[in-house]
Length: 188
Image: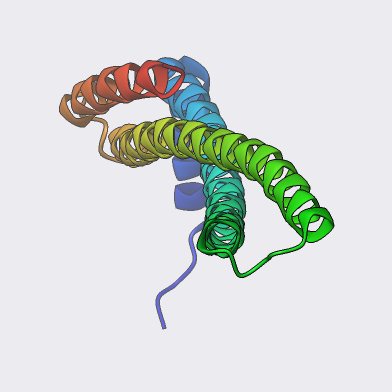
């Protein structure tokens, strides 16, 4: 078992204290700032992801509503065609029944026109939600890239503190700069 020398331990502690008090304070400050940027990028990334998924869900809901409206419109058109065929073929011979069927056809045509308009509106809304979802997912990807670059930069700058060589710190700063570009793109 190695011997413990108080004098050596105190000398080593004194050297470390000098390194901390006289050392480069840029490294820990840079690491802290970059870590905060990484946290912000992760926060915005998560928000963009959740928003994008929400927009896709809403797009699916409106696509389903549009499909339902189109189906209802088609069934209305079939009813109209059947009723018109019955009127034109002479199957309905009494005047009151003919008038009732003609009234029903007119009501069904108005209703089907409104249904078609609603289907088109639902389809437009679904497309708007899909476009919004794509924008948010692109934003998510940019924030993810920036968060990754910031995290790599934190590691590189932290290694600089341990190795006392500034080469990795400069590489970390380059990674941070590129991360800032992606971070800015995330907002657009």
